Length: 125
Image 1 (cartoon, helix red, strand yellow):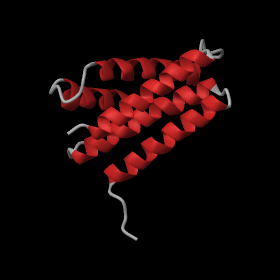
Image 2: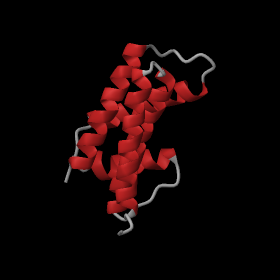
Image 3: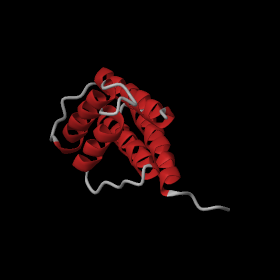
């Protein structure tokens, strides 16, 4: 069996994180769903950066390189940058707030945004 490239491995991780987000949402684990949704996007970005020969060493750098290669070049719509920022903010809330201000509807919207983000980013040329 052939080994996966780093880009392929990150694509698999993105798909797994998105599936985990949907599963957590179905079981009303809002915080876990939002965290996994963000990481699905994070891994999708890493996949695309690997294809470009870029690596990012931090969450901040992932965002910077994502905007450099995909938003500023107009390869994808700027709304994905806003989605990523919103998911990042809510992931921080979900992971670190003692009582996150999330409800099921908001978590469902964030998971749907992550699915759109991953699908769009991985499909763009």
